[in-house]
Length: 213
Image (cartoon, rainbow, N blue to C red):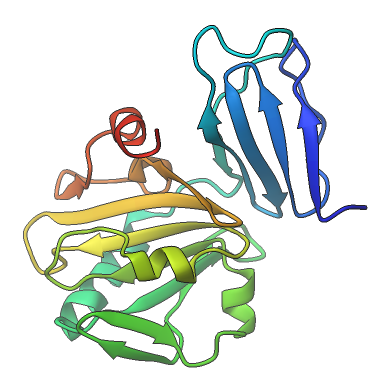
């Protein structure tokens, strides 16, 4: 089995399960990359085809699916509280579902500064199996830095940034990473959000259209 695979999308648009680590799919509306691991599936655009597209192929649509459902608000509130407590330092958490399909969080041993955070053990078993990676930006806005782009290139995972952690309205920005390809998603896909939360960058469709293409 190849680690990276390539596939043409049939006119039905239906595809079998992805094989290998990830695969590129040529569809009528562009090139997509997709991958699956336990608890998470993603199919995201890499390049869009010009209208009328690539004839004779089926279309694909972006899909990001967390099988355990959204992270509960109480866990998000706890993470936000801890982030505010150590601000202006940044902080890092990993999230994954437990045996009962409930989300659990781990704040690993880490080296924190006002502009960066790194786990002391990059091979920590909890971190290796986590589905969601969250780091805080103290009182700055929520954004992914160029260093984040470098650090988040391996594997399939959802990445989130928390900004304005001590302000009345917390900011959250989320994206899925598929082996170095990124696609911004609405935080509402990841968390059940209350009104005190601001979705940094606007709604998913508008944000993706303005930044990905």
